[in-house]
Length: 443
Image 1 (tube, rainbow, N blue to C red):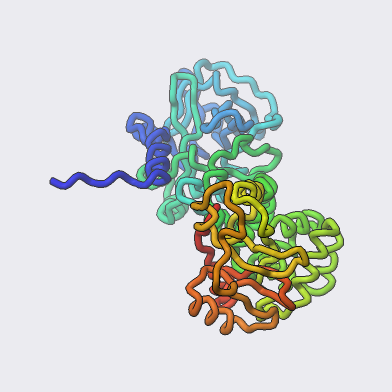
Image 2 (cartoon, rainbow, N blue to C red; image 1 turned 180 degrees about the vertical axis):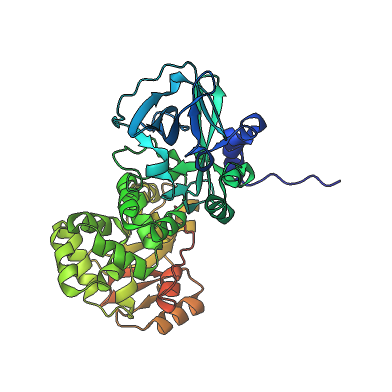
């Protein structure tokens, strides 16, 4: 029998992470309790006499643990809402909860810092499943005992059948469906859905996601959670995600974001992508964001905005790595390393003369394979570099790329280089409603 090839590393990592989830353990999965099923169920004392009705469960949500511990319950006793500490509860099942003794402190419930009311604050709110790379809505939550006195929030149910179960008789509401539950270890909650609660501090799940996956989440989330997700991302990661968003969704996001924050996000984007985003805004909105940017950033974007968006100058990137004929290849490589943040926009090095005029465009392969002590003059081609004028239409740019079999062309005017257009920039220009970013060298 042929041996099955190993899974790609990212897939293996995701499978390993999922195998470590609590709900991957059958012992935990088989004894989960449905929050929906137990809310409204009776609270009984040690002798079995009913003393109240369960209204909600309280979890400690301070970011320290992947599975929040349940610290107690809110119960209705007569007309009072009383607090029952978890250590006073002997057992919780789908039929209700049982106290360890007949004694019950009827202090009025008051929420403390870092506490979440699971039914009130989490049920029916938006969450992010970082394993499944999707926005979900909690139809039910699942609790399980990991030790005799250790009740935890371990999962969330997102099945439409669960919503129907909630509308049916109580005897059906009590029946959990753990085969349709997402492990809580894969969940990223949001403050917008949970009042007075801090986010998990690690955010390791979100940081595993690719820009396109984060863009999908941003498009699916409601406004409060979307703003919070942006706030938790590194500026570069947030900018990468914005570049992958649908243009209409990005326009909406920038309009609903405070101007200073929106300007900071746009400034982190690649200049050509930032210019595209600004073009979609009204003139007043665009000028307001530009006012919040540093002078160099503002000037770069204003120059790009002067070009027609359908011309070569309108969709080029102005970022270039340049060199002189006398520069050593080793020094140019070091310069490329310093430009790593812009690696996706670099597939060649522009060689200029002492008057800043174009001599050649040397590809990355030639630079990577040349001896370190060689000079750029040793790498010059016999044929001239591939160029277009800033007013060239996208069809002309595409034809130049096809004819030359190059991955990019330079935009020049009077032998001075204004920017570079790569293959995926042409695709974006041809298909403005779609964002298709291909992997490039140095990424």
